[in-house]
Image (tube, rainbow, N blue to C red; front, top):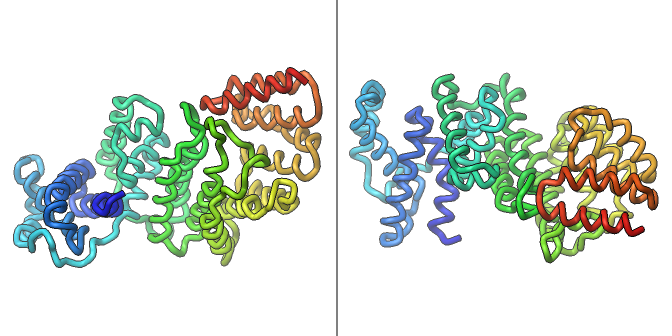
Length: 411
């Protein structure tokens, strides 16, 4: 990434958030942000990147916004309110503006994009579009939907913000505990899709995983005292540290016990482990902090056998109390199987068999098939692998399961 691209990547979200705050219109802010970047692409290669690129972009975008408002009679009332600022902008210093640093108002945009009034499927898309700066076709690829479908979804989300008058603001201290989990869930959902693609030719979508981590880093800078933000960032770093070892030469999945741990990213593990301490200090633990602590135990072990499985199970007990979901219970059962043997884990999985949210859930079917296989040759294992194969999303997962099924059938 060259210098200009790096500036755009860093400044785009900040600029967009500041313009939304100033003009109260997401569409207008997006348009003039694009116009300002286009102007920079024209001038900066010739004149050089200005000392304060954010101020340059803001000055340019603000002028373009005022020009658009002047041409649009529908915005006459708003233009009158902004007239004083428009005049100031008209007489502002040229491109290399000496103004102060561009205010970082991205936190407001985080909470707007993840507002509970928006449908869940729209929140992640809008976050990728506005805060990560992905184009609509890129967001469509991320969600594996046609571009037209995604364009309609984004337009729908913006319309909802406008018509419901969703405010561009950070929730008050009394609202933050209720609203922050929604923001964190949007970021984690983006990471999860990157970690294990729900469909398509690749097991991992590293671009999505890395965008989620970048967004979490921004959020961490904006909310440094929120321990669950630290916990989420820690969790993603500790999991992402294994990315290079998770796939084989042909893109097939490599299970945890078969991974070359020498290929794990020790810098990310060190950073994530330090954040775990922050996430678990100074108050009751949160769901992301506990999950990060579990991930740290995996990353710090020399191999699967020396993993502190009693501690992993104990942490899952804590997590299950915080989040009594069937998915957490599934993960705890897998940890119990490592601590107490496959029969103990399988018994817990059988207790979850009637849970509607796990019906057809690929990780549950794979976990059950693997435990049956570990118990020795039996027809139930082959049937379980067939069920897992039917529910598999990505092609690498299907290839992997076909191989395991063939091995079971031959035994």
